[in-house]
Image 1 (cartoon, helix red, strand yellow):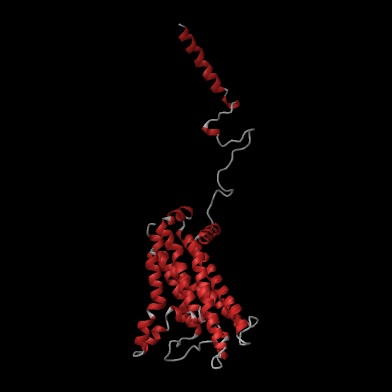
Image 2 (cartoon, rainbow, N blue to C red):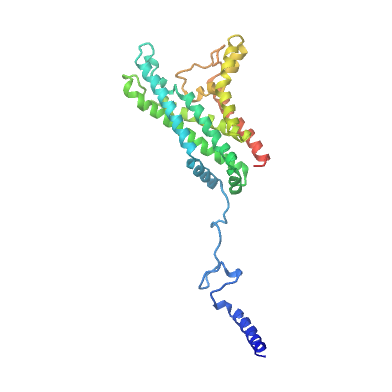
Length: 310
């Protein structure tokens, strides 16, 4: 009898407390985002609704690239090789009466070796994400694949330009005190062209390797193909050029040969338009071919990246 009475009393009491819940500290799921004191509901996410923009994609890519140990290692190696070879050859030329007049321009002698290291950097930026599986997180954050590719290309391009420019400046700074007055002057606009020209050539090579990375999705495959196009293929073509003229012309289309038109913009070291030589093209034509070495792999990489699952 008493149990019945307790049950009858408890039921309405619980119902009454529930009805009075608006004044209590316990909140229903519908009010979990409401501030105490009757404030307006809070909005989850960014003020603009969390919309992804190109600027944010670039910032995210820059954070990822600069946080990678491989970025710093390859950058230091690229600068170190370029400076050591360029400064060493420039100082050696300056100390030789036979080559002293060419010593100032020799600061770019190490560029090709620096470009090889920069190619490794460009490939690792994307192939490292595929090998670790991070590419899925990148696509979740930036679903627009074209935007993601362009953001990566922009970050890699700017970083490579800085590596190339800094390398040339350091080469000049290291070698100038030991060149007995044969060093060039950075106040000369043409001589300064070595600085930004080297930066552009490093950018082109890095973008070529980045495109190969998107295309092959393999660190070993992308680096191997990049090294083959830049360095390995030159040996058999050089041997064939001894016998066939068409092989000499083919050699003139190689990435490292056409890169000379970019990092030597005022043709201090090379004379262009010479028939029956690897420099048979005009300088502007060689520069366009070099640009194609960067653009075509990126375009092919984008086609694969846009159509294939991560």
